[in-house]
Amino acid sequence: FCLIYLDLRHDKYDAYLKAKQKYPQVRFIVSNPCFEIWLLYYFTENPKAESSSQAVKEQMKKCVPGYNEAMDVYDQCDLEDKYAVAINRSEKKNAFYEEDKILVERNPYTEVQDLILILKQHWLIKVGADIWAERFFMCSHSIISQTEKITITGRKKGFVQSTGIIRSRNYLA
Image 1 (cartoon, rainbow, N blue to C red):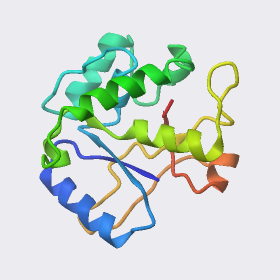
Image 2: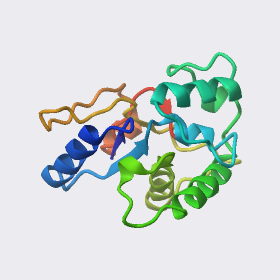
Image 3: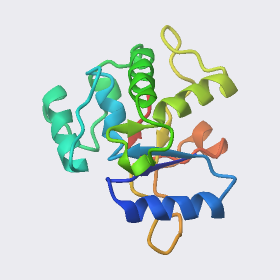
């Protein structure tokens, strides 16, 4: 899995399409403009469209005072048992977009909920009373460069590393 931020940029979208063809074994999880859209679904039913990733991060600061990208929002805001609400909200918003509307023009948009559901299904991860087998991390950087290379940054962490999931500083659920 590889999380991609489109940052509302058509050049990143084009690079994503090329990488998707070049790396068919990778499941790309797209967020537009950025990952924080997913986090906002924990706090609001309908995050507003913004003109930049920075503006989305400012929205996050209204929900989580002092928010920064390195913050452990999952623990700090006690979100462990609230993932189903975020999934429902993001799926509801995504359903409003026309099928033929390209991803970079969907704002806000995220597919992180798809990853959560896949992980739950494949690894039978229980949420709520049982803590996730481990917290899952994803790349929190735009990972497709202009040269169509996938650059992956992140911390190594036992179980997650062994499953081939790419991750770094942001919690998924």
